[in-house]
Amino acid sequence: MRLKDKVTIITGGASGIGLATAQKFAAEGAKVVVCDVNQAGVDQVVSELAASGATAAGYLVDVTNTAQIASMVADVKQKFGRIDVLVNNAGITADAQFVKMTEEQFDRVIDINLKGTYNCARAVIDTMVEQGSGVLLNASSVVGVYGNFGQTNYAATKFGVIGMVKTWSKELGKKGIRANAVCPGFVATPMVKAMPEKVIQAMEERVPMRRMAQPEEIANVYAFLASDEASYINGAAIEVTGGVTL
Ligand code: NAI
Figure 1 (cartoon, helix red, strand yellow):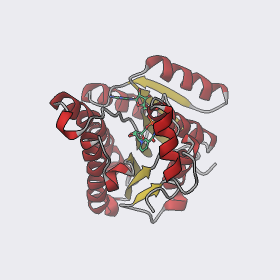
Figure 2 (figure 1 turned 60 degrees about the vertical axis):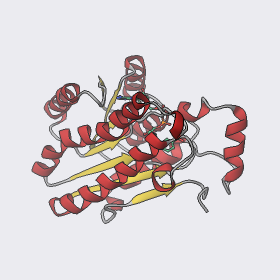
Figure 3 (figure 1 turned 120 degrees about the vertical axis):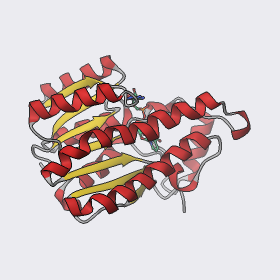
């Protein structure tokens, strides 16, 4: 119960790492707010969490839509009175080699992964400053440290997330707010499982541990970073890769 009663908003919480994070935070006692563009997914996770005895709420929110985000934040504050943790997890890929990437592909990924992260943090930050406490956790990637073939757009967003996190940590540390990024390697989620089997095998061979991460192994890191055990971790970009970059 490391997160007892911590009011936590998780974006993209209907699938993959976001879903595992919602489950982990609920198990640790948090009051979990899940938002996603997938209404059926939101309904399912909220009803599962509620059935397990957790306090949970769900919202249909597109992280590119500031009106939807503002309305969710206002409702969460009314319901729960505070916001302790934001997990900026929602993200997409739209891969193509640089010479083939369209402007639409570039803009779509920037809008969701980078601007969406900014939008959601902006929407909760005044509340956290007023409280004098809060934790901003943000999905970067190993691709946000090293780049990746076919991912000009995605790499730009994930490097950008680390840049925002380091800036937020410098500006907000004195206000009792910590900001950190998590940089997973390959994680077995729908985003990665959609790749051809041969590509997945080749990826796994590059990992010293010879396997992808399970979403729960990333959720565990978010839970630690949100907890008071991580009280002096601020401005970090934590790689959770099974050693793939070595
Ligand atoms: P996923 O595709 O399983 O889940 C992403 C969720 O975000 C989905 O439920 C989707 O509906 C939601 N979403 C998409 N666009 C949205 C929007 N505009 N507003 C609100 N919700 C939206 O993805 P996965 O793999 O769980 O990834 C989660 C995060 O972790 C992403 O930011 C991703 O870039 C990052 N990541 C994933 C890695 C992997 O290997 N799976 C590796 C490194 C980082």
